Length: 242
Image (tube, rainbow, N blue to C red; front, top):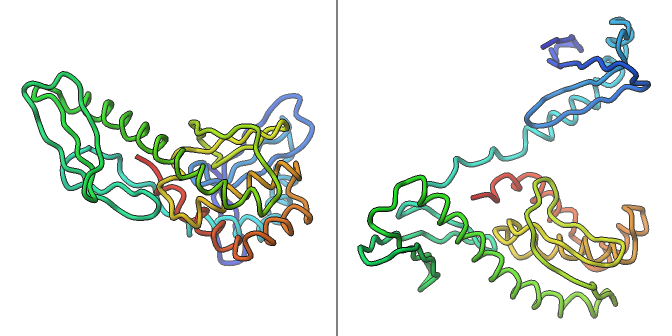
């Protein structure tokens, strides 16, 4: 790890030297921090000049990341834990059964009810219930998204060729050139206003395959407060996990 001084601020960074690389890449992320990937043999003074010139941008990005919520500790799937759906939190109740071979999960009277075999160990319980929760979010989410499509498709005069949930590590949604939309199933943990933003965001890509000014004007015409919804997702996105 290296560091340089910018005013009263010390900025730590890492650097990778790559043979054959022609340009310089600079990134600031939550896990890796400030990282440069540069051509092999790049002069250290030139590297420091680049960092100094980019320091205001680096500090801006670091401040933005400081606002991002830390990812919660992994769920243990025990009674009393809370799970969110559309921005509201619901408690889990776990029952053990001597006659049950496979765990089950249901939502009744405002809480999640899980039943597991008495002899199921903690690791298996986490794996199986995590899978059941994911399936529940996808099933419930598919119904809710179909309802929201009936609201936004007429307004936007757009219709996806397909819409489905999938596992996505870094994106909340994608739209293909053919007009198929894929949503990150974890978005169903967010408030409905944020789900709507992601849906409108992807629907708009059917018309605009970029993030041009025209694209954002179109999104704003549907959701005038889209920036607040987008900001909520930027800050709270890490919390939408199991």
